[in-house]
Length: 266
Image 1 (spheres, rainbow, N blue to C red):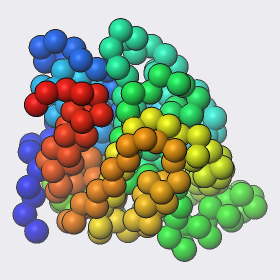
Image 2: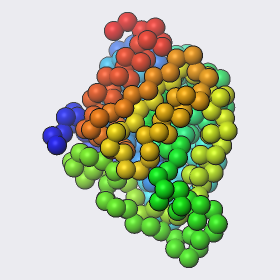
Image 3: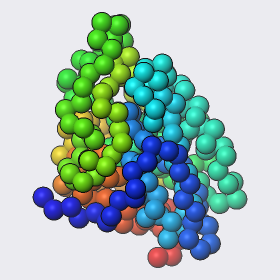
Image 4: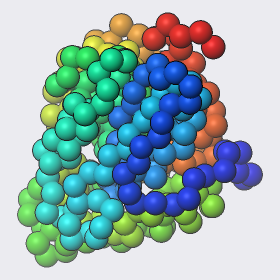
């Protein structure tokens, strides 16, 4: 398969800030996924800058350092970090929240807990697991992580079809199993509150995702109370779609969604 996405930025684990090009028309909070880093959402932030969107990519607690740090963090820690970053965004323009995988669940929490979300964009939202992940998450909640603290990933760099993006992605090589239980708790809270989400919503999922079933995105699209909902399946991408082969198409669809929902001219 050929890589069709534009060139990626240099790999980094750090939080980022991308200024708008020209007049700022919106501000975006970008939230990465479980065991990942802001690098996962940086290409989309870069693609939105010419539209007049300034973006901040938050580094969630326990991420970007070492897996043992993540094992000490809770889903509430991730939520509070995202809310603090949201509250720091400029309030004079519409504010957008963008989340990848577990970060998409946090984006939904921001949409429920803050009433000024102008639009939300979800990339492969981790609302449920495939069977193996579900069993591992339940085992974590039962305390079995004490006997096996970490599980190795099937491939370094994560579930990405683009080999260059996979090699560049600075994600953790292992999953702290205690933290997987925290993701499960977050899933339950988000499911209970789906009907409280009222921001315009654009949901994406990769058809080749091996980590989160594409049905998770469909469940969200059907369950929210948003006045405008879009649901797109990216044919050739796996899970980390912000870095994968369809990333240019993802950016184009996101720009179109924001133009429609925020009333922008192309």
